[in-house]
Image (cartoon, rainbow, N blue to C red; front, side, top):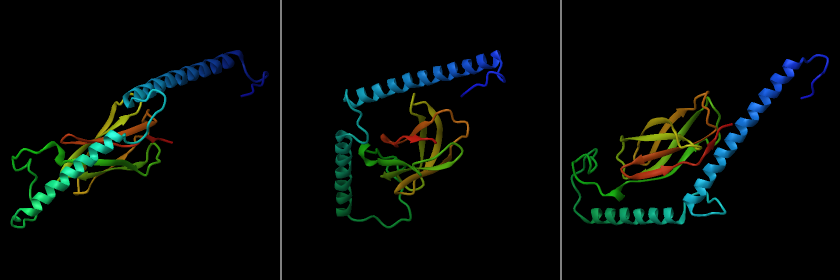
Amino acid sequence: MILDSQSVTAPQVLAELELLRRKSGLLERRLVTLEAALEELRKAQGRPRELQLGPTPEDVGELKHRVERLERRREAQAATPAAPATPHRPSPARRGLPVPEDTVALVRARWVPDVSARGESVTLRAHADGIDPGTVVAIDVRSLVDAQVLATLEAPCDGDFVTTTWRIPSDLPHPEIFFEVRHQGALARSPILVLE
């Protein structure tokens, strides 16, 4: 900004400089916070020099293991005599039976659309397996910087997907957010949504 010396007074210049100093301080603090968060992510991934995005090989292996166990369980159920047809059979948990940890899987959590801005509506969606249709699942929207919960939403499952819509608050101070879907020990984490 070029200041015209004839139209600008000393107090205006001082006020402008103070504003610039404050903005600079805020940017420096934000940079330090983001660098600390990046370092924590690197340590959590066990990669000191590079940040790995996406699922780790361990995550993929665990998911394959769960899918294989679900397929074996379905094959065993198909081999047993079929129960009389009912419009809806409650899950084992609702029938009071113990539910093995690996009967529920949540994967591929994502934002639709994957580009958005404050004040707009977005859809939060994750693939679900082993969750009865109509079951309501909690979704936590979190800030990337400190993982603070910004909103907790309820999302019904249709048997294949857990889906809900959320309007991003216009005054949301956090420009980078993600969400987590949890149900009976299963967890899916979305990619980061950077608000425009």
